[in-house]
Image (cartoon, rainbow, N blue to C red; front, side):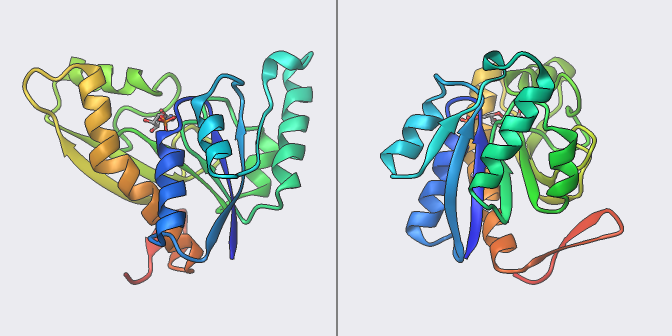
Length: 209
Ligand code: GAR
């Protein structure tokens, strides 16, 4: 059974998709060992509690410097003895030592088709604002392993979504979540939990479906 820790900052709709996947069985061989938020007001914490999943907040605001926060964050993660860390809308820079320790064992959901609209400064609604400003007709979401860069790790799954005339960033964000994120994040976890994802030469491969 793969022990999964989900890290969140906000509403937690992706966390909910993962909880539902585990409860309904579309994610097999996996359990959510814990949820960590950097924001004490994140609704994601409520979602975890509603499903009896251990959850806690580790906020940078409660620490004198980033080094101390990073130390505590890593300690909290390790307390759950995870096999896989899932960044589901976690908007804090990951401590470098965590990236090294969990190489090929930490994944992130990003609301664009990487390498478009990703990297520093592209998160949440900003991604969709940038896509609309550029006038692209197809957007989407990506699940990738986390490496030392920002949104640069091996890509596991992607799903495209069409932009519609009259879209606002909020409408587009919701469509990308519904049609792409809530599908490919649980799917990627299921694939990993069942040994169907390999990484070679900096690229991820889905073995057979
Ligand atoms: C999601 O759209 C996720 O892809 C994005 O934050 C949102 C969190 O929503 N993540 C990033 O932008 C990471 N760079 P949620 O809390 O409802 O899952």
